[in-house]
Picture 1: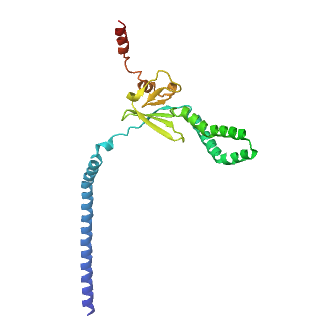
Picture 2 (picture 1 turned 30 degrees about the vertical axis):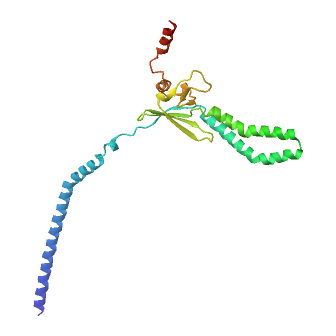
Picture 3 (picture 1 turned 120 degrees about the vertical axis):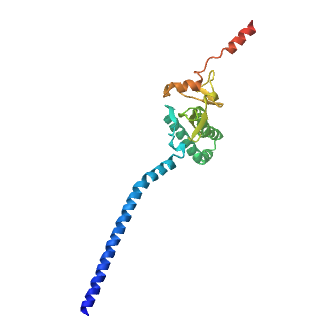
Length: 225
């Protein structure tokens, strides 16, 4: 009986050993096939990825950067002056009721009128006058090569940057003007020609690159004759 049991156990062991060897061969063949398929399919997947990224031709175009061609040399000073006037005006408006009450205690009408006039000029007229002078000062000027437009920046009353987009066709050169270099879309602007990075842009803006029109002179001469 023991011999029979030993024979059965040895037979089962041989069978399990053969089955394990078969499984090893199956796994080796499967791994080799996966490696081969990976080597064959990887270039295909790479090409498909290349096609997917190159489907949009605009994605390969380099982005055109906006060029800064001018910076106003007095931009910081103008910002500081406008900030001081706005802060002083705000302080004056807050302190005006207290000041007027103190002046009324004196009982002098002349003093009340004088203080009110001075305080009104200091609080209202001063910031408006400074803004009228500085609102035409160009602090920055950019050029967009894609749209071929110029972008001028100025300060508004509350010291926020105001953008003006224009082309050379929108510019008119004044004959004479205080703090005015050119009139852009009906708005006078002041720019220092010495601060341009490229004087060609200044020539285009001012129209110096265009031929001189002598038609007006010839018409006047014909009328005189």
